[in-house]
Image (cartoon, rainbow, N blue to C red):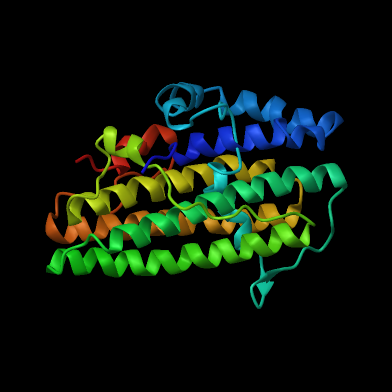
Amino acid sequence: MKTSKTPLALSRLVADRVSGTESDRVSGTESNRVSGTESDRVSGMESNRVSGMESDRVSGTESSWDPSTSRRNLLLTGLLAGVGGAIGLRSLPSAAQSNADIAILNAAIDLEQQAIWAYKTAAGKLSSTEVGKMVLDVATKSLKDHEQHRDLLVGAVRQLGGTPSPARDSYDLSTYIDDKEGNLDSDANIAKLALALEFDAALAYNDAFIQLSNKDLVAAASTIGPNEIAHATAIRAVFNSLDSSILVVPSPFVSADTRERWILKV
């Protein structure tokens, strides 16, 4: 299982979709906005992690933001106030803006699909011990959140006239495993893998949502990011119950700079 770490992965996947095939649809300043100043921002302080360790996680031509990896950053849009699972946009964006937003939203959908797949796959590998049951309880709740995020994002893409990104048969998470940020060989390591994925999801949201042109989507995005961190803290709370030296909230900030303090190594 392998995946590019979300924050950076998102950046690249979105970049590929928006400045690749999507760029043909995004013209003029809109194209520059998504792949210009935004790419500079992502390749600034973040570039070391995005184009370094992160670049290894984004395979093929996904060297910049792409929707499929950026899916969690775009989860933010999923929490857009909607009734009955539908997201209501107060105003529809222009064609160019709509295409750019669809690319970002589809990146978020892909991230959500990855999270759903990861939790379902890991559930079958957890033991029946007390620790395994604790991890399963947290995983089950997080899974439901991700499914709701996905459904809302799918509705948003369709409302904008786009086609939602389909789920894959499997997702590659081997880079996390190679970096010893989790594994599927024990209850504790499964929880550590989930922690890394959730934290990166939060980073992805913080980084990608500002690219959305629709104000309703931006507002929604800002409400989903905290949910990803809530998942991360819930996982750390499990570890804290087993070892009080492990802080539930290891830093007052959620950023690439504090990532190492949040992640628990194998």
